[in-house]
Image 1 (cartoon, rainbow, N blue to C red):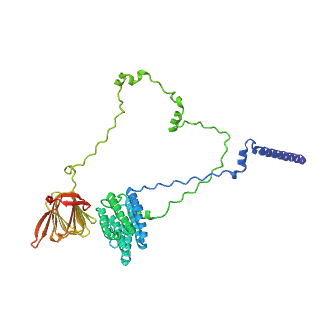
Image 2 (tube, rainbow, N blue to C red; image 1 turned 180 degrees about the horizontal axis):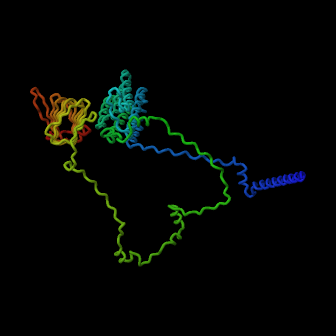
Image 3 (cartoon, rainbow, N blue to C red; image 1 turned 180 degrees about the vertical axis):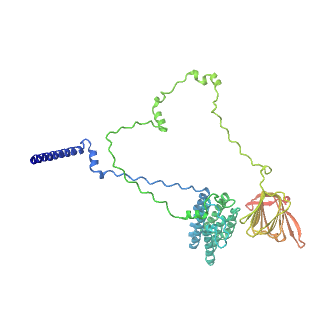
Length: 511
């Protein structure tokens, strides 16, 4: 019994070994690939030598916000006029070139300030006098450059280039136009006049290099005055919906670049050989390619056209032309309507009167036929803007900086003293009485005016243009007699060949 079991076990083991060998033969024959596909054998035999997948392209950079037109215009002034002046300054003297570089730096700081105003709202003035406000912090770099140039001028009085340093010292003050709220271009023109006082002394030497240097600086002021007049006639404007100014300044001054791009994704699987490929059907091309391909067919291109019978031709059948109608969709385009003219003053909606102090500026607007005079207590730093007032008397108590009057009829103004000037534009039947001293009166497009000057103001300069009917009343003589002197409004001009220029004479009957 035992011998029989052993025989069965031996037989079973042999059968298992035979089955194992058979399975191994089958497995080895299954892995072998047909010889007809050698490329697939090479791909599976050496998967590490497959063609590497190129990394994906970096993500595109986010588009930057376009610069405002006035920033691009100011960049043009810096690149052309200011940089040319700086290059010529290096040829004058090392010290002059060093100070001119500060003027270039100040112009760039001003450009940064203008860029901040496009993205930030106007900062509030700090009520704490010991703590600098945000506006003062923004203007500090420009202020430091102005003081540095002035210090250099005072420290080099014995230098042969002292006049050049004086031109630069006075010229640096032009950068302060961004702090002027009313007609800042006039500040540019005033500084230009001061610069010309020193610059004309250099022009007398007739040194070609120095003459070119002075004229290049003059060109900077001409370009800047035109620029400020075009883009900032009423001062720098801020963005009412912008961020706080200090945050915008930090974002512009930060030098950190954009974050690095993310790492590329891991390589994909090795390419798979497509043994059976089917070509996709070509689709007809569209656009201009299809048009040119049809034109290249020659005469065959007209095969699809349909011939028109003579009975269907309108130029040979008047009855068809008579019965034809224009479709509703074909409407003749109309020429643009002429622009609307502005309404006259008496038809416009009247706004409520306003008298308010905003910062250092008094605003007096829309007062009409007031029985009582409007009295205002002013200080040295105050400027007064009077607009659209009629049949009104305004009294200014104290010493103010400047007064501007526009679009006002039959306005009576009484004031004590002024530091700057009275500027009157587009006003009729205007009356001004000066109790103290004012240096200048400017009048433009005035029809009828009476000016009463005190005895201390007889030296006041009066400038008028496009005006008529202006009378000047002064007090002179030992008896303090009052004299009424009409200002001329008619001028005769002719060319004098001996003088080689135009001669202007006041017409006698106009004065």
